[in-house]
Length: 341
Ligand SMILES: Nc1ncnc2c1ncn2[C@@H]1O[C@H](COP(=O)(O)OP(=O)(O)OP(=O)(O)O)[C@@H](O)[C@H]1O
Ligand SMILES: [Mg+2]
Image (cartoon, rainbow, N blue to C red; front, top):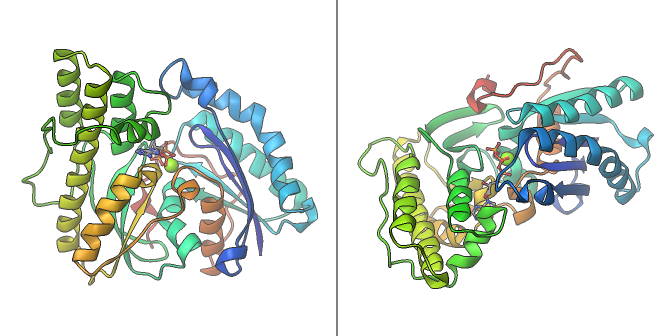
């Protein structure tokens, strides 16, 4: 089963060829182009520019992806595409290519939820068995989900305001770090004192494993405004902020474990923020103390990529899900738990 998959929901144009084979042969090609240059001057993703860049980039990426897999159009069995949630202009570009290929090649198409792609990535990369506890932390989402089986998603808690990735990006911007902010902040934090500034951990006393990051963001902003930082202070603020996120993640994971209906044996961290090495280490040590296995997908599969979309389609096919009709409408909002049977 060869799936050609397309991801265009934010600022990565990505196309992959994925197979339902043993782990090391699953990803036949994965070509991802980030739009760093297009958005750098604005310090954030501009939806209109993102949609235009997807339109420009998608054809060469499609060709490159086929070439790298040594594939011809006739070798494609199924088409998979991110159909939401995301920036709608970008999603439309991917969906139009998917529909065109599906109609012209007469191959079935699967409209995939982007969050399901993140949620199942550790099964693509590590064959993690169901059930597991998922911490999905990305640019637009931060949530705990009990993944009981394919399309059996139980939401345990989520952010009430911003996502952790968004918080990384905004603070990096305030500190004049490079774009994109998350990875830049992580690099600066290596040289900083994580204990110099004490930042708040919103919802610390709540019983549920929910998150709130807006108060933390404001506290960091006020610290920066009060003492305009020199290079070392900027690194100290970055390290203290990242340390606080780590403490929040561990403390909320403990709460999520308490809310889970099954005995959790595995914690999977997914989404762009899961590419952060400091947070991976903190959560991995925390899980080791509790005799829980911590699983992190490889870095290039944490941030947006088409391979995870192709894999979600493979699981859908294996579970007898019917292909999507060509009248499928892309969805800017599409909560993961709506997919549950
Ligand atoms: N090393 C890192 N440390 C912290 N954050 C990071 C790191 N690498 C990436 N991120 C953050 O991850 C986010 C991007 O992740 P991803 O591509 O999964 O998000 P998205 O697709 O924009 O959002 P969503 O998946 O919620 O729709 C950005 O906010 C980015 O700053
Ligand atoms: Mg994403």
